[in-house]
Amino acid sequence: MFKKIFFVMIVICLAVLAIAPVQAAGNLKVSANSADVSFPQSINFKVSAQDDVKITEIRLQYSIDMVSFAQLVSEAFVAFPSSTSVNTQWKWDLTRIGGLPPGTVIRYRWLLKDANGNTMTTPYAEVKFDDGRYTWKSIVQNKVTLYWYQGDQSFGQTLMQATQDALTRLSGSTGATIKDPVRLYIYANQNDLLGSMIFPQDWTGGVAFTSYGCIAIGISSSNLDWGKGAIAHELTHLITAQATDNPYNGLPTWLDEGLAMYNQGPLDISFTNSLNKAIQAKTLITVRTLSSPFSTDAGISYLDYAESYGIVSYLIATYGKDKMAALETTFQQGSTYDGALQKVYGFNMDGLNTKWQATLK
Image (cartoon, rainbow, N blue to C red):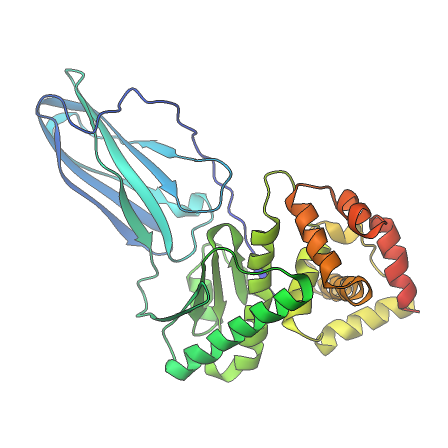
């Protein structure tokens, strides 16, 4: 099973700051400035500064390169003994935000003030939050950069071809195409993947960090077939997010997961069995209920995913690619779940539920 993670961060939207000049007044200066990555737990920002009088205030401003509808900057006040020569640091504990995916770029700068009221601001610098525990190889094709560290060149090329095939299938069934660059990290196994995350779930096999344009999956040479499907699944989440991203509303879970399952390929027997049992027992879950997050119970979640696959398959097979593309465009405009279906197909979620379940008889 796959897991999609969204990180929610509390940020400070800064107005025009009193500390603005890049050039220092007086003899206030920064002599050293660095950021050390300890993946995946933290980033340690360090600064050294000198002045003729005591330095009284040091702040760190930082922002993350990610999809956002507002320019967000966070600020940290650094605790240090006031002195004419300061060597201090601020550690960003990423467990507080659930972590960051590999390859994320963070921009930062220091703001300083001394006892005479002199101020200075350093130029922005960047630090890349790389997983330095491994020596990564990479290949690039069609806005996708694929990274891996275990396996020869043909292993990476095989997975890149699977990625391109998945993009072609997705475009053919929904019209969605890749817009922004994607980073795809292939860990050698599930344990290595879980080691790249903070608070991972034991069952996680692949993760789409949709706001960061990043995917991480654990794939070995012995499970290539599963890995190709996992790439298609997570890539669909990411490309669909690019196609429908808006500040007002997300997708119903059945559509998001149904598209990913559909692009992944035919249902595995475990999903099919779960769906058939629910049909026979008349215990199918409604489309409206499937709009909410899926159950954490494994038995129920199999049915959640199987039904979502069936619903999306029904829409594409019955109404075609153009209607699905129109549905994504409508969601991108911030439509409600019922409103989008009504506009594109002429029925709401209850109507979809009736029509789809009628085909199961």
